[in-house]
Length: 115
Length: 445
Image (cartoon, rainbow over all chains, first blue to last red; front, side, top):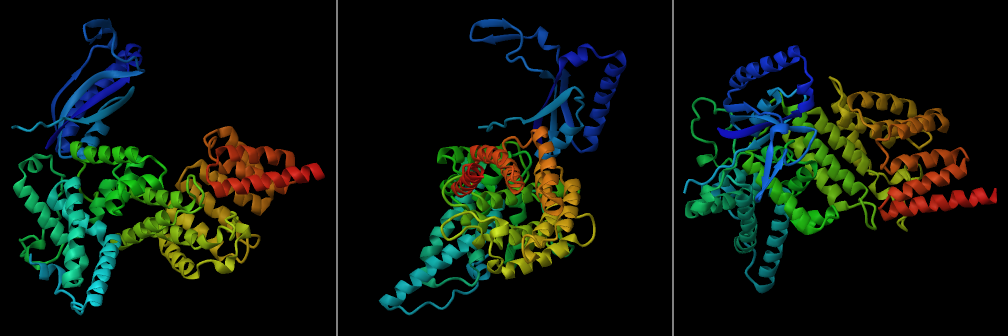
């Protein structure tokens, strides 16, 4: 098994204006996702949601700036670290990952030599 | 595995006189070149499984071809050159892996195990029996994995499946060599780092994955059919490689209708290759081509494949395009083409494959069936749509219909628009010629 990071990139504004009903559906989808991943034979190692980019602080060198590095319509809003057999399996999991206001990016975790 | 079980007993050595030795060496060089063209994919695919790394596999296969030149000129060409090369390349890979710990530490190519062997045959088939598994489909599907960009899929296929050098691929696509080298390296790195499995996709994924493979082969063909730039219209090397790939796929997946469809499409289109230019290099349209010079055996083979591809089930986009090509190939002349039937096929094609290019081709057929005005109306809609804004055949087709209607001023404008989008010299000269014609007639009349 190999590890992949699923980066969830979505339109933050859509969350800010979503009704409680929609937010409830999103929560439910994420709860369901955990079960679905197991059904594919994969595993969620960890996963977290992030506070919106308005709370981000960027640092380059010594310069500290308010806000994220890049202002994009779809911003990183959360992630899952998963275990999958190969890229096809990771993509299968990525397709199941809830991201109704955007999409996800799947990145393999780098493996370093142990020696 | 011994070399005799893999390669068979060496062929009769030639006479050992000076002249004879020279001939043997030439024969060996010819056999190596032949084996490079025919067996590269098989040898590399089987070596990759052992090497666990595409770069290492390529290096070992290169070495095997080099040693073949020496060995075959001394001992004669083996009965099965592919098996000889594979055995040599795999041995080299195993040797290198044994000796070099840094190679062993590289992230290995993820080889999906084969189907479990039938009971009673526990040992791997390759041990002792001398049978080397045919891994060419694994190689093809890995090169055309959807997680790789289309241009990377094309480059990898030419490099790994066809055995072309980076310089040759760069030249074929008119890209600087360092750019192509970077493209190939990046794609290989992604295969290993993202763990793209070295396997043939399962039945559920197969239709989509196969479509990517066929699209790559078709793209190779069309790039060769009308070179993106430069002086000659056709790049024979690319066209031949594409047909060779389609034949290989047909051999490896004999029951896939779309594989048949693609091979049929390529054969039927390529049957016209010799007639697409006049002796002076001038481009000849379908209606001007000498139909007696079309390659009849290729048309026969293509037509038979189309029939098989259309049999049963809903035909796919390659089978339908091939069916259209077959109708053109069978028509006694451009005017006496079954345009109604072609229109019907375009309607089916439009349903199987939503593409504005299909709509444009349908508009041309419609103009032949119902007159240029009908075709122009459809082309007008396509212009509104905007997706073909940079597609040179849109203004070119429009110009031709306007010319037929005698609307020469508008035709000239459309020819100018087409010229702005066209880089191929043969096509440019054709368009300039037509532009000069309509401008002269307009002034004269």
